[in-house]
Length: 173
Ligand SMILES: Cc1cc2nc3c(=O)[nH]c(=O)nc-3n(C[C@H](O)[C@H](O)[C@H](O)COP(=O)(O)O)c2cc1C
Image (cartoon, rainbow, N blue to C red; front, side, top):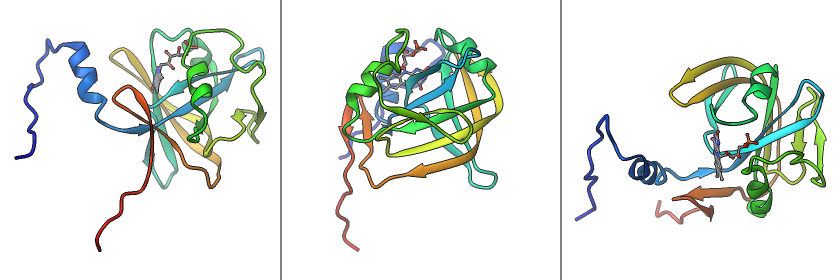
């Protein structure tokens, strides 16, 4: 018999166990970037990215209220989503730490709307911030995609707190 979910949700749920359950939802890995009011590129590793709408083209991601970069993203009119390729784990690790000057020594350029774009990414979306919603301990950013590009590169996956390879499964048709 297949395993069945056991632990019911409750208002006083155990945060670690809740994270374990959420970790079963496999995702890609992105680095969301923008520029400070001084023009310095900043960014963070983020797997809360999701598509929202095709027409108009909308995407979302959420940022922890504890991020030191919160004021930078709140003041910015635009952001970029860099979808990481399978060989960019070191980049993901670097941008997942609260350290200054994360872009130092990192190959990158700037998109048509001035947002920092990381070399070697599998896909990139430059967005104008459409809406922000404070929800719990995060802020959800919704962006309208103004420009995008993608390459024939296998994406990096994330699952149960670890990086993962994403491969197609053979199906019987
Ligand atoms: C795979 C992965 C996914 C993450 N996803 C998010 C996310 O969606 N939102 C978020 O606020 N932090 C996320 N984080 C944590 C941030 O990357 C981390 O807190 C980082 O220090 C934030 O950058 P900052 O401290 O410079 O703001 C994630 C970390 C990893 C490793």
